[in-house]
Image 1 (cartoon, rainbow, N blue to C red):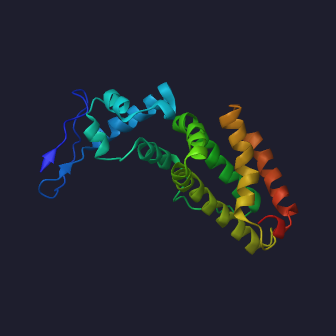
Image 2: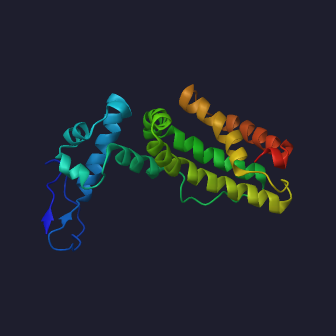
Image 3: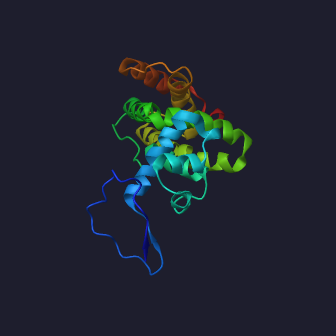
Length: 218
């Protein structure tokens, strides 16, 4: 069994006892993994996704390229790992008891996600790359959109069951109304989003969903 060198002399080894690994396998040190992730954030802020390289990340983390490739097969997968860390995938749909409350909670979660420094540094570049590369587009969809869609589906389904929305309203329509304006304001225009702004946006989303014909929302 082999082990990786630490990312730097100043980074202490984790206190937990090492796990057993198959003979000949490399033990992936958690401190090295975290050093690489931190280096990705710094590298993205410095040069952006298009100019970021595995070599630059490894150099900034104080590790060899091999340490990076043991964990991620490309810079796309490395960045998507970070994106997935703050995406909403796996979070349960809000359950406040009202459509307005659920939409307001969704907006709060997404506003927090979009304020994350990785989001502001990565998402615009990823969307540009996704427009050029179907593989990147599919990966970005899986990392960002799928979790949001599941939350929206839960919100719409609960609203239908309470009689607040008619049958047939599509979750993507809810996402368009809710996340589109939020993304524009926080990521493109880079204006601050306040609580009162989210309150107003939630009311507008609810009004739009209630007025949308079910067959036109598909």
